[in-house]
Length: 156
Image 1 (cartoon, helix red, strand yellow):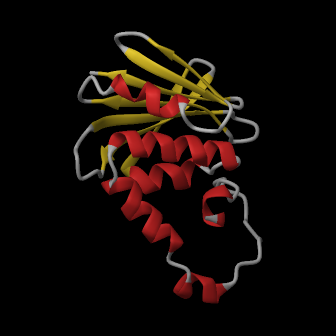
Image 2 (image 1 turned 60 degrees about the vertical axis):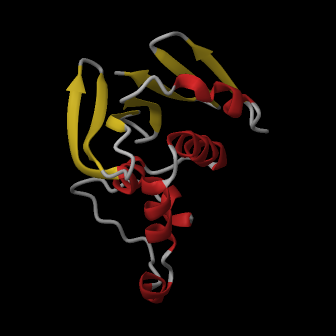
């Protein structure tokens, strides 16, 4: 899963990080993770995202690519937000994903997931995890804080 924690690609800057070309042909961990994230239940996806954020600083470009296609960059005042419109999930339970990033370090600050149903029932499973998280729930959203990151699920 090292691929998930690489530094984001910056347009106009040459990336001279050494790459083991054999790993491109042998290591299929990216494809396996992509397949997994696109086919597991919404509850399991959220738990997987919590574990990803708990393990380190994921690359927002890679993370969005695991969930779908059609990434659009938007600047909303002081915020830079990347939206993923083409979600590739077998359950068709997610309509939109937005990731707000820190412009300097290109780190994820906040992830918003807009879901179809009122699937905000997963708070019990989340609070049973052994990681240091905090949750806040209303009838419209479930907010999960992990370290300095925030995942918010909005019911549509």
